[in-house]
Amino acid sequence: MTTVSPLVAIQGTLEKMADKFNEALPQHMEVNKFISVAKLTLNKNQNLVNADRNSLLQTFMDSAKDGLYLDGKEASAVLYGNQVKYIPMVEGVIKVLHNSGLIKSICAEVVYENDLFDYELGTAPKITHKPLITGDRGKPICVYAVAITTNGGEYMELMNMSEVEKCRAVSRGSSSPHSPWVKWFDQMAKKTVIHRIAKRLPKNDAINSVVRIDDDTNFKEPVNVTPNPDKQDNPLSKLKEVMGMNDQDVEQAKEEVLNNLSKEE
Image 1 (cartoon, helix red, strand yellow):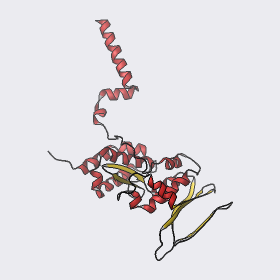
Image 2 (image 1 turned 135 degrees about the horizontal axis):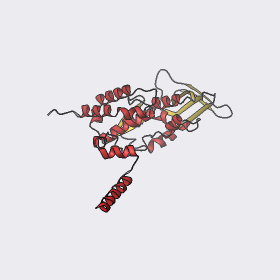
Image 3 (image 1 turned 60 degrees about the vertical axis):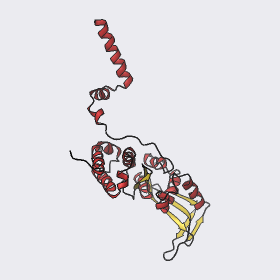
């Protein structure tokens, strides 16, 4: 009997989930490419292959719903113990905002103490930022985001490091060497300020998805999204699906049939 490796088994499961992924993905994304990127991610990280299977598959499903590739650039899969957590990266969040059709441009930057930086409030808010090109830029002092909507609206948001650290403090496992806050501090700081500015932008489904995208502050219980062959091959399950019946309906129908049989006897 041939033994199938965990990697091959998971890759096979991803292929079986193609229809589910295709249903979740935005129309402009191809399911075959999404699955290919997912397989490549698994090939590069054996720890993911050995992690909890349900949380891993849920991570891929979450990234499909947001229309992001789990490639480490748009979104990442991060391990917390044996559980896998879906983390959209700043590039992915910006992608979702651009795809909303309401945002002409958006950017986020971290400011360091040796950069030239000026921030003005009032009737005409203004940010001037000239990063230090050579030499030590020093410690980060703040992070900001600027967004321009397609109708010409301008939005700015700035957070100092104290505010950023407060967000980090409530993040699950933020001090762990495997935390995205440790591995990609700049990216997480940018994403934090983008989340804040997104709450002020004009809303549609795409922008709402950015606002509600779970940060690593919320760790959901994994949901089993693995295809269930027993359910697929079960005639009763197929009948329930076709007839729109739930378990209670089935039990009631069975009881009525038994009663009718008793009367006939």
